[in-house]
Length: 195
Image 1 (cartoon, rainbow, N blue to C red):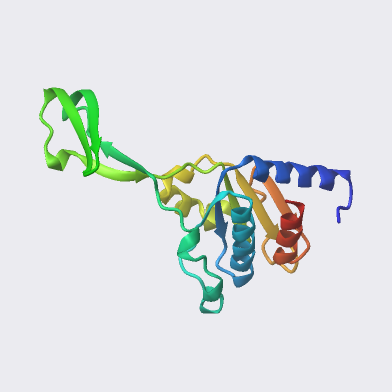
Image 2: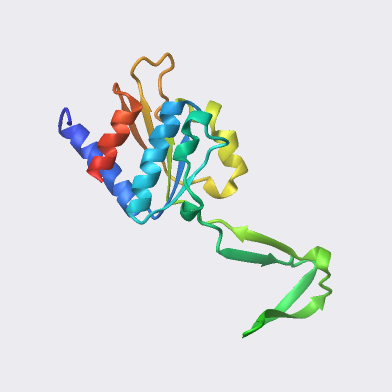
């Protein structure tokens, strides 16, 4: 399975990186093999109790039957209420909770809070790890997309790719790189078995 002790050390480091991560984001290239590989690892990581998110625009028609059901979708659980300091200086926060609902009270020391000054948004859990599948060049292919998900920036990347029959060489942009001359699905299945 491993050619030498260096390959074994790399495999152990990758296994530890995944094992130690709780929140994992999977980012496949648009090719069916990359998407299938990501789905296989998605379901395996879910079985291990990981919080896994699959970042993909759209599944190809041929793979729609493999799409995760709503049972696997995790919804944001952290609601953030934001009031800029330049609008009002909030000095105290307290709440009332009863059978009918929840009320949040803000005591304002200076300024006036209006509805249009208050924003509400969900706080996404920062990932412990991003795993890419079939991505050759981070800067060309996904850096702009990850920038739009600001909470993904600065997370370590595990770059998984095949060099078999590839025209473009992988740039080894990850903190860890698993790039081999084997089909991508074979690399993923070996990784899943090691986990």
